[in-house]
Length: 483
Image (cartoon, rainbow, N blue to C red; front, top):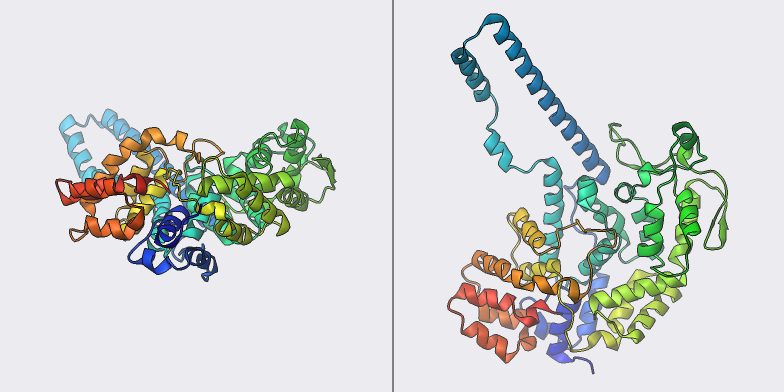
């Protein structure tokens, strides 16, 4: 059984986007599938607005210079303090005179308390990127492509705990340009991005028999190779061996970045031959000649076309959008499309929408905190004025933006998030308090839920003691929490 009419439209906008707004439920009721598919055809779909944002290299260099300046200021302050102590010892300056001199010096400095309220450069870069990301969710007519960006960004995740300066730029440069392109291109872009090379320690890796490895008595780091095989392509228990991991890690030696101290290109990708393990490598039964950086690209291209990769990606997509235990027939459809189109992600997304299994009326998927928060912003049309507050709410619910606990990203099953649902009430209450006073909870039920809203939910909202409480209860309704 599949949903139809207004129910299908409301379900589709929650399941594949960020939820309905205004009169979309009625407008899309005639052809919900067509409405979602149309999101794939928008010009520049998924690219996002980034005119004022720095590239990953520019951001990394800026943070490097910022930290160097902070270190210099600290050392200068320590030097000034020691010089003052030496003068006091030599001249016998009184405590009163010394205090007066210190007060005069402090008066000439900016107010530390005021400065402390402003985020420092690394945090500011993340917040600026986050603002653009949240705004894209608010402004999205449907949000299917934006949801795809979020899915792939989590699939190829990095963490601000390791490389804060590049988190948002990595998503813009490694994920967004390829979200409706070929998986091969996204895979190569993600794995060769400096943020990924830092996150999974490939910048520290060098072949034992490379020039650098011999001279520095250092060797291989297998993290990137292992996670590509286990998480990004084939999946666990897919037939690769430890020998494959080691050989692939040797292939990836030399994939690194320009040192941040280089003022023009620091933080950018570079292949350094003296780090690269020379010679042919055997990966998954196939031999790859030593072609420098092309050796790695060749392995990645073959991994992208491996049958296990098609199955792994298909199941993750179906699990994310439809059900924790997705219908095997849906997974098979996506897997077949992935193989038949050489990993054309737009065609795979189309297959997801066209499959009847994607339109089951049962809404069993619990929205992750990020999706739930974005849904509130989207359905109310509120752009966050203080993005740090939204990021804080997301972190409080266990899903800090671009900070997954491990390279496998945030989990996509209810078991990982259900215990935190009660905490969402505090977030809902605060969000409700900050909505414009003209926000009508009953109008919001009709626009955001429509036919999905049960009689129990409508009665609960109607019995609320205040408009704010009614809005908070609506945001906590099962129909709002699930897709």
